[in-house]
Image (cartoon, rainbow, N blue to C red; front, side, top):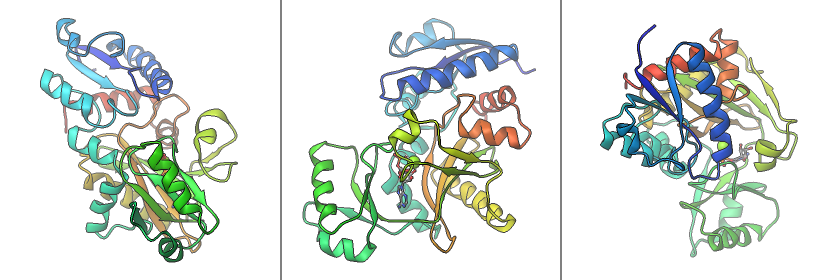
Length: 306
Ligand SMILES: Nc1ncnc2c1ncn2[C@@H]1O[C@H](COP(=O)(O)OP(=O)(O)O)[C@@H](O)[C@H]1O
Ligand SMILES: [Mg+2]
């Protein structure tokens, strides 16, 4: 076993996803210790990040979800402290947080994304409703956890929801997106290889905040229901999409939607996926024959190999 030195598992933090981060962090801490790694919990909400140096840490395993932990901020601070860390760097983290700019990159590479329109105060909302058709989705470009994501069903509703999102000062541009009715999937990647896809079947109308955090009836299929050719295509798209945002060898997840005809579209990239024992990447890793603790060690190694 490689000697990783003194490892800080960064968990908790200040974001709204603090609790999820603590779950991920504790699962990782236990796994790393089981592999003989000298791992310790480190919560930046309790101890200033620069204390990492004073406390003799050699490397950081980042499990801080949401803003600050996932958007390039912590990554920049760790660069400044010259502490190697797991997960994406500053650029990929910042791009991955921004659905609009991620999609611009993917479009430039001719990778399939659902048709979308950026909304502004001067948008012709009736024309957008006609262009994308109803129902459609509206969402802020730089939130997460389905916060601010709505399915628009009736004429006139788009402008009303746009105004609501504006009034709530959501992060990033506000975008309208064509409704993709053919199901939802996700595909984890690490070391430029993809794990088997997972099909996500929420019991709500879509995979909303409720389904993600307050209900436990979402069905996850891994292996998913894709025919081999589509499975191959999705894994290939996951790798290309992650490469496009600068994900390198790191561990991440790319989410997908299919349309009524089964065509595959990239929905978004996640540069700091959940790592609780029941999270999606650990699930698909297990299907691929990689145990949770081994996955944690693989991720720890990425800190030195970007
Ligand atoms: N264009 C779309 N067509 C169908 N469902 C969508 C679409 N956009 C979003 N959704 C639904 O809303 C959920 C959250 O949207 P998403 O863009 O992934 O934002 P978040 O970053 O908050 O997860 C998705 O998981 C999916 O269930
Ligand atoms: Mg999502």
